[in-house]
Image (cartoon, rainbow, N blue to C red; front, side, top):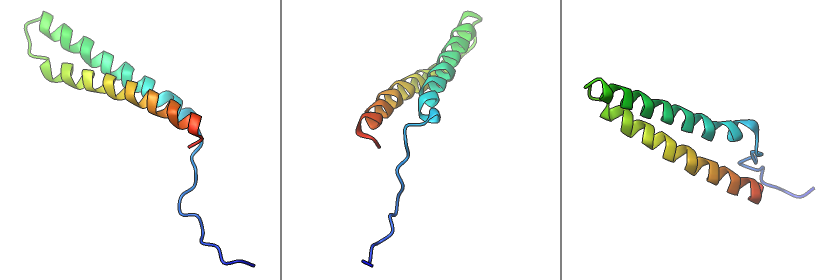
Length: 75
């Protein structure tokens, strides 16, 4: 029997969590953007919600393309 080193990392397949997480991030980001627009309509400061929402939307879109690339590579 040959001495083999055990594998340190196991491969994670392209599962349902990877499919859902980008969409949840985009949905929550759009929710924050809509809340901030509503605050601005009523003369309140909602700029923090706006930028957090934009960041979540961008993060969700980037994660979507990253996970699609990982699925093609079999990672």
